[in-house]
Length: 185
Image 1 (spheres, rainbow, N blue to C red):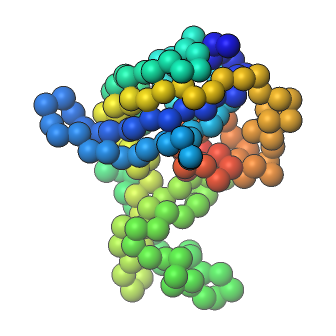
Image 2 (spheres, rainbow, N blue to C red):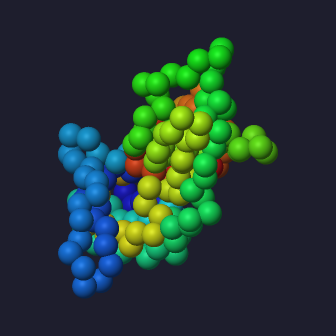
């Protein structure tokens, strides 16, 4: 069976980042024990990522590079914001264990769009957050193997689009998933 729309795909791979001529850095591994699993053609992965996998079968290997433009775009300094610390209060208190440098927090903009922000710095009155995708500005190099291809069940497809999944938008693309993942909106 070949990878095409509505196929349940399982992959193992290494993802390295870096530009041509630089030493590449291993960013992520999907292993046989913890593979990447997704339904092809449902906007759950980057379009360019899927293009490189389309038509492959179980056992096929792949090796490809996604440019910054094909992946998450350039790093945008305008997506680093200083927010008043009091917006993180719940019932007049701030959860100090949550508001820690390095944590990624679910947020919502003024239009109601969900987004993820990484806490860069916490001061007395201000929290500096980065709303760039963690891989923004990176060239991504994938090398791996297709470990499974099968028809996705109607239940799996329905679950992908349910709000119980934690995502009510289309378009993800992050391999770390709780529901739709950090690449959601």
